[in-house]
Image 1 (cartoon, rainbow, N blue to C red):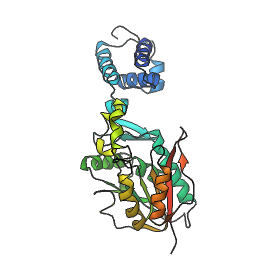
Image 2: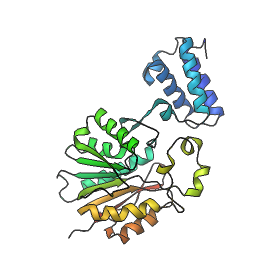
Image 3: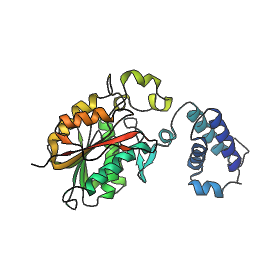
Image 4: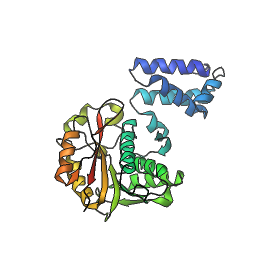
Length: 290
């Protein structure tokens, strides 16, 4: 791409990505050019007629090769926006997906409709990863305090760093443990995006997920439900009376998760919430009052 203008390089890169059947070809091209130039998307448009330097062209070609090999843009840049918040990533964390914002939406719905919704909420995020769900909720609930758990120390370091960067570290704590094993509660809200892919299906996932996301954050066991069997009974014990549990689930799993919640003594006050693709993505249960 040496000798090309910014706009010509963008069009070339977009065409290469489309030929490789990358769904987000145009956006990926703009984001990668912006990263090379140190510009946002508006800046890339404004710089359309300037020529790339040889160093910029070399960096862009390296990005292009990596993207064409299946590496996600977020992995290349080490960050991803979620709920309007910039989050850093690590090899121990999933890349936060727009689908997971459905969990945040349903959790906020459960908070607004709870008795004494104006109290200072205590939140737990089980398997917090980058801290995406917890930090999104803390950004919306100014008086809330939250704790995130993860079995990975590297993930917890990433989540803590994100909390610091977002000015939320004073209301967020992070604990290394398996699911909620180290927590004592009570909590008003517990959220989780656990691993829910069936073990046999992982080999068929897209390269950007199968190769670049940590397997431990994907593999839900033979039927995809192992994590829920562990965390739902734990969460039910840790919830305060009338507290809520909200979890992300895979396609076709919402009915099974509702059954596990009912078996743990939780009521189902609302139907599962669908993501933008129409998949029932978030399931909520509420603990019965005493």
